[in-house]
Amino acid sequence: MSRTSLTFPRSSRIAAATDRATDDRVREIFLRTMGRKLRDEETEVAVDFLNSQGDQADAYRSLLWSLLVTNEFMFSH
Image (tube, rainbow, N blue to C red):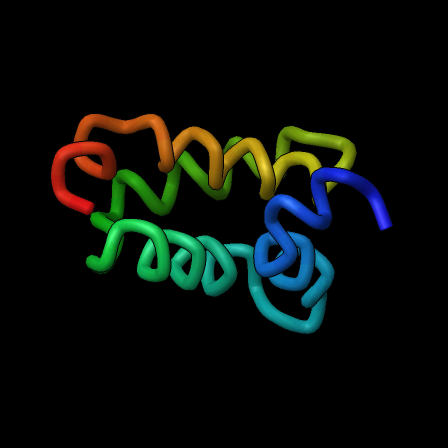
């Protein structure tokens, strides 16, 4: 098991759930992290980012990190 899998085990499981659509997986990460539903524009940006990356597990970890360092997360959670 990689170090990043230990850091974000849930993001690794979500990334591995290839039977689910990317936008569904993005919605789950966003809801679990931010505690709210995504806006359409946020969904589009996140899905475009994930689709542009080669290593999906790493891309999902990057998405999660990007949510954790937002002002919204830091000041609301």
